[in-house]
Length: 190
Image (tube, rainbow, N blue to C red; front, side, top):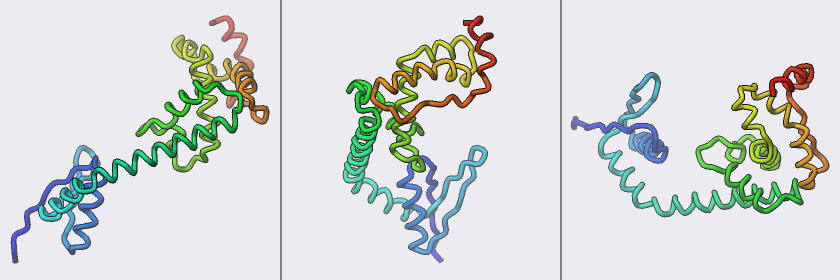
């Protein structure tokens, strides 16, 4: 029986890890799972399998990069159209800022969430943009005011801007209606 050398394949490159795993199984080879750094799972596959995957990785790199650019551009376009549809009087500058922020790669922002409808993501991103760019929300947080209270304090003005941008259907409801009783105290702090 020939001696097989194994190559360590760390997590981090999804293409490499997934294809090493698949190629090894297609060839009937054993894949070893390595537990590293408190639960991080890496794998070990035969060196020949690893070399095949790396060669294919390099051969298809340009096509994969082109496909990713196309997918990202399509997402940005659809997201921008959705923002414009929901807020028909929104300034173009704000659409660009919202789209750039919401579609940032590896950010878990609303445009990148698979389970969130694009229309809902556009609405949430616009509200977040207004809160952070057009109000004193950041200043309130810097003063140590809890996030829920800071949101409550800027909700009314956020709703006014939403209406200015042409959305009459929606109103941002504060998730913390019970905080109304604290407003007198907060006014004294501010």
